[in-house]
Length: 269
Image 1: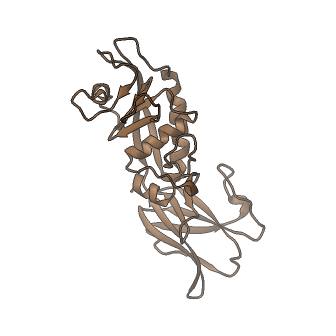
Image 2: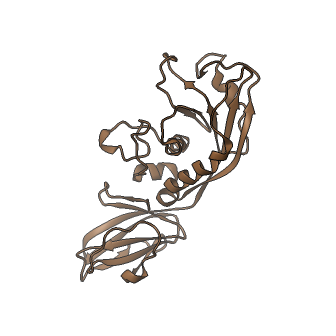
Image 3: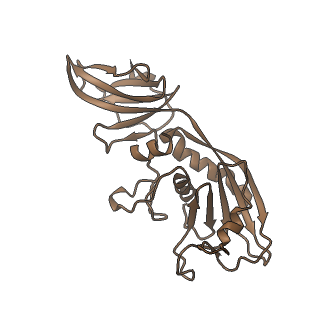
């Protein structure tokens, strides 16, 4: 959860500007380790005992060399381990400024008594999980602005529907959003956005700064909310079974929480 992508060649790491990440170099005796651009990234060798106790740590071998990477300024650099002029191995690093996203959660009630079963007291826990996913991997921080009830002055029916018509219920609901938020979640009882509204095959939908999120959106609620935030930040779904560990995998409750290089760079350029 610290912004590492081993699936890239070379492997890739996000380092916050003004923050640190740590790297283990295995089999690197005698190699010289440097940053390709010290205005972006500096590197310092430290002892095993100097590794911070917090965060996740891989299993280390006694001979592993440990390096602290520090983000100096926003940009891209290579951490290179060389023997003379020959690069034996390198790590690509993108340094990221902190990005803040302001979130509001709107708990929808309509004039006919339809309402979400979710409660505003849950919002802080959702934001905590969103931050667990985004802070270390992308240097993105979510801030809770409001968790509040909103009342729609009409009967929205058994499903809140997105359509391409003038009577689009999406517009009716999202008009009640918090103008001070970067992203508004609207918690509703049921949401559909396709030609089969009687079949519950949509859990949530995000357009721009708005997300309508139904009560039956699986079990990993905050993870699905984090996924929808990824859409707000510009990233699409994918349905690659080999990448189910990714947050942007499109199937609810089958996705993981990993953010690969392309998603981090897209969400926090």
